[in-house]
Image 1 (cartoon, chains in turn yellow, brown):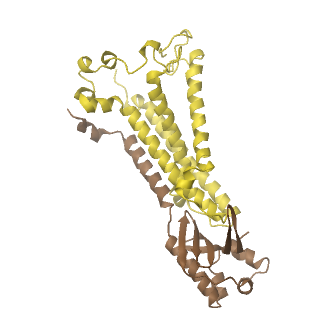
Image 2: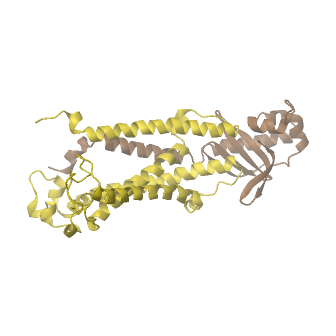
Image 3: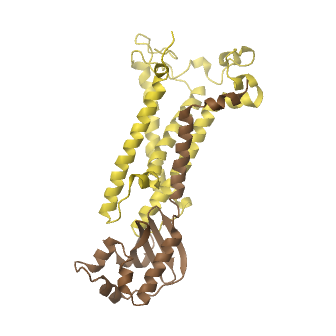
Length: 225
Length: 143
């Protein structure tokens, strides 16, 4: 049965829209907060355009981005080797590792509709076999770099408005401000993954592929509803 | 069939994400030293006007909050009070650093703090002395 593209792409469309609406909401609420602070210091207020191109907005966005991409990077890579009995987020205990070519549909087990880089062999296939982790890792590192640069700029501006020296980017990388921003995001991401891995052993959400079938046993691993 | 065939079909979300990432990186970098030269020129001009006895013109280079603090409930008294303070002369620029909407200019003889107001820089504090990790002690500053 042929479905409408809106149906077959519902998940990406819904999350894409949720992302945009949240980002726009963050821009407006962040601007209001920034201008409240400006007013309390008797400094000039700024426009939305000035705010969304400011380091204050950039650091608030990128500090969350880097932690999300780190979360997925670790989840994607660690679940190659680490398993959790009874969790639909884990593969079977005996499948720990990078698995056989047969399991991964490579080499003699390629299929006519396998992706071109999977068929190419050599370096291309090696890269493609790790492309999800590589891209997630690259976005994580770039977001973290952007957080450090924008965070330093916002921190330095705050220091200057308090009549203090701004310091340098290198000093900022070792500062409590940078690591507090970073770790407060990391801890929440790791808690969320831990909750998902553990709670999905015992709890169910009927119809969700993130859950096991409602009637599945608690110790059944790698079954999705 | 090569990978290149996939490129035109790269999901718009990926391109949008890449563009957004570059924009944010640019926003972060744009906040580094924007107009530090203009800030230095304003700090020098402030001291030149004071040296020339033009305290009224120097007052017009102050941020509103700083003017209020200098006048301290006596509107219009900025020029007289600024003259009376007798800030030490300062001239050559040693260093100028600007981040976001704030700047610090180290002159030979003074450190001046500035903020962005419209399309120009205005002085938030002058006659400042460093105190290690604590805020500078400034003879002219806002509240």
